[in-house]
Image (tube, rainbow, N blue to C red; front, side, top):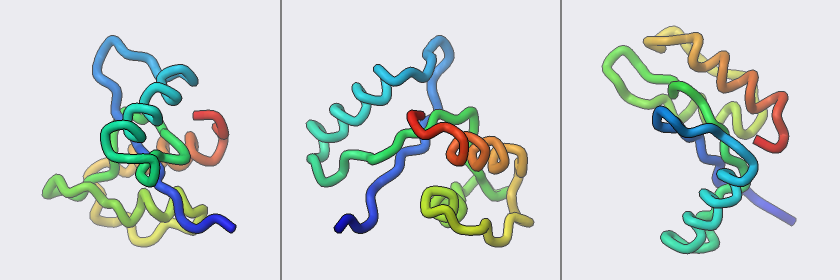
Amino acid sequence: MKGEAPVAFVILKDGFEGSPELVDKLKKHVGVKIGPIARPEDIIFTAALPKTRSGKIMRRLLRDIAEGRALGDVTTLADPEAMQEIAGKYGKDEDH
């Protein structure tokens, strides 16, 4: 039986493209640098993360998406479109 597993939401630098090969490379890198226990189950490439107007990343919303729960309060987001993009990618793309 499996419990919770890490999910990484990654913003790529200009000039880099998300691919299955990059997902594998990033997962292996985390496994080597931090340890196998921290290796993400999924990696989602996105253009932006959901942040409040003061610039804090709303980890609660990312956790809701990763666990398939309904999103909580999003009224404090500086860019609500970023949240919609991430939710759309995570729900549709199983290979990331």
